[in-house]
Amino acid sequence: MKTWFPKVLFCYLPLLLIPIVYTTNTLDANLQIRFILLATFSVVLSGYFLYRLSKKEVFPFQKLIREKYIILYFLYLIMSSTGLLIYSVNMADGMFDWFKIALGGIILLLLILIFEKHSDFFRHFARAMVLLGAISCTIALIQLGNIMLNETITHSVLYNMSATFGHKNILSEFLLLFVAFGFFGFLHDKKIWKPAGAIVAFLSLLLLISSMTRAVWVAFAVASLSTAIVFFISIRKRKGRRRIFNKRFLLISAALVSVFALSIFFYSRLDSISTFQKQLQKTTNLKQGSANERIMLWKNTARLATEHPLTGYGLGSWRIEILKFGKKGMENNNNLTFYQRPHNDFLWVAMEQGIPALLIYLLLAALLLRYMLKIVLTSDNQEKRDFFLMMFFGYIGYLVFSCFSFPKERIEHILVQSFAVSLVLIERTRGKATAPSGKCKGYIPGVIFIAIGGFSIFAGCERIQSEIHTFRAFEQRERLNWKGVITEIDKTNPAFYIIDATSTPLLWYRGMANFNLNHFEEATKDFENAFRINPNHIHVLNNLGTCYEKSGEHKKALEKFEKAVEISPVFYEAWLNICAIKFNAGDIDGAYNAVIQAKNDSTQGRYLPYLKAVMQAKGH
Image (cartoon, rainbow, N blue to C red):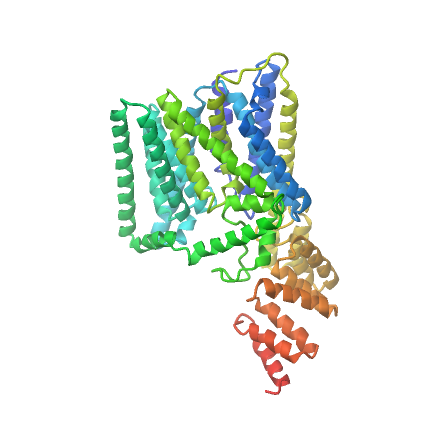
């Protein structure tokens, strides 16, 4: 088969297709559809691998699985299963996360096996990233232009600039990678790729600065400093390279100065320089705003990690377990905002997968950095040294923004990381990983890979269908079509999708619909099942307590209301419900203490009548 075929099919196509596909019919426009595409890619890759085996083109599979990184990755996958099977109350999301880890490892292995003999694989990967960067920058520039024409530039408004990544911060993380690979293309590529690389690097850096994403600013600074140190060390090891060093140093310095100057000019012309300055100040201010909020999330996540240190709570469990700490002292101390992630991948791994899994996760990162450094410092090929230096820059940036973001969750990050690690391991094993004599035993792993990928496609399709029906249920809820809500929720598959992105069990929505239809018995059952799924959700607790109160189970109702206000002390509706129960039970002082807690409630007309009744009962 012609040598261009695997490069086009397995390099350019997935890297250009998966990160840009999205749908507007689901709650998360990217996650489910890209998971299906990632699983499909793994199946196609596995099929091609088996085809090559049938042609007697033997791959070094036995040698490869002895590689330290592969062994550790497999161990990490196994350890990620323990907490999931023992503790997790969210098996549907947990299995989804587990399959993401498995697919990342499968793709990593197969890329090595297929491209081990393609010496220019790294160059094509860089070109694919430049093309993706060109597409992403073009879309982001159009979005930024629309913002400039219609609104004042602010940090919140800039969230509308996300290209196809669904979130400005994720776009910024990829812009950092586009800077690296664009600059590599400018240094070493030929023909149209050289100016294309320069343009992509320039625009990516400009957009990265303009995006006001503080976490990526920090990542860029740390990655730049670390890469500069490695670059200096590599230069000192090669005397006689001073002229090349000076040329590159001047190019990098001139590019950085020009982009920063252009960014400052851009903001000053738009009268948005104050917003830019505020973002710089917030980067170092950890006591206010989102920075303080994230620190509190990190502390609570660390507390959870210590409760099950060996196995973790299980994949998919964080957004349920974190709710029991409430949101007291946080900026979003309300009853509408629910956190989906801890915004720190390392703490996330520790909490859900256990401390040993975190240690392996960190060891994998350390091994990869070590391998990159060795290539940069010892390779005789200038082009490869520069490529892996840019890889080092990108991976340092990835590790830094992993401390503030959630790249391990996103499919596009998993895909690019699989490619990057495969390139490092290919270079590390090149010339060493010779095929063993005798019959190759790669058929069984290939079949297993296809089975995992095939089931992942099935699970992904079930999840996306369930999310579509959940999305439609929300639309019916807005129209107060309660029967429509029940119909749509009944079409979801609880084996693959049981809670939405806000940690709300789908059965809660059906319970609300039944409650509004006066089907109180059905509503109680729905709320009880929703409570089993997420016992820390304040609205589940409040509505279940309401159903218990209606059925005369006052003690059980009071327990649920009291747990709700323990989690959220500003949940005024639950305080008023407590007031009503205690008032009816003759506990006037208890009713007074409860109604006083709801004194800031301005959203309902219940507070003043309740207060008046309590005060009259107290003789005031």
